[in-house]
Length: 531
Image (cartoon, rainbow, N blue to C red):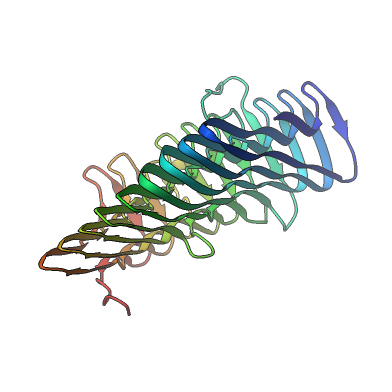
């Protein structure tokens, strides 16, 4: 499903008004549902269900526009996008083969911006882009047969982009001969905000009963890899006047992939399933090359803070049969975003207040796998992996300096922080004359955190310079295996790693003049599991 919702002052427009308020608000739903019943001596089903949303929502001042407004200008783009697929199936036959493929995708674009080469003078300016993207899948299958086999693949993915910016877009260059210019004259200054709410959910439920045997493979995959950015574009000049400049980017995904299944047969039953949940993507608040920042205080803030339960992958499988029951479950939860706030090289900042550049990440990745196999031969295998790594960077690579090498800010505060938690649990059980169970749980929280002044930078402050980087990782891994029978074999392995890389520094070649203290802090504190 494709659509466009726009609210804008057109390109090449000359506009004068007391105040301007513009809102682009889009709600888009794509639903694909299938109910399948197959009954016969021999049954075969091959079902594909897709839901896709590619909504474009924007509020903007167009390129080359000339806008003069002594009051407030507020432009907001808000999108609510839902893609849902669902299937409920019943298969019954002497021989039953089923294949199911369900996909839900959101690839929306939500933006609020002032276009390239526009000249804007306002009392205050607010550009806000906010999107909620929710691809979801639910699948419920019941099979009754003499012999059954099949495969199920569920994939819900959000690849949306949310952005707020002034000047050329993220992939374009500006011109020194005709810069984008935005000036605020009032105390409210200039605000750019981009916020992405990603809600991805996949639910899998399987039940199979057979006389002879059953073989099945299934997967549940939920991913959020949104791009969220707020920035001042190439060759854009921004003056917030007596008010602040606030540039913020926020991503708060809630991602879950959960599956459960049970199969029983008189002779043989073997099933394997995987659950994968991922919330990564990029979050950036920054300037591009050749930007110029003037005014009072300036803040660039990027945050990655998953909501709800964070990132969760869970799988529970069971197989029983008189001859052999084999069951395997694998769960993987990954949260490895790139979060950055920065002043790019060739950017010049000349303000009277404080320059704040901060990037932060706080995420939890939880994976849980359970598998049970029972029969004359019983085998259960459960593997779980939780990865809460990622990169968090806050830095100044441009110049914070005034005319004739005067101070470019009262103070500069650069901070990068990460609080990462990875939790992996696995449990496998087997029972029979010959029984074997294998367990593995792996959790790692190994973020990389950097806060620095690059060697290309010149900074002159009337007061302090503070650079701080901190990491608070936690990794918990536990596994439990049970094997019961005349011959019982069991193996369990748990691995947990919490090893942050934390750096705070001033790069070689930088030129620093501070009227007050210079403080450089790098700290890491590995958290107690379960604390």
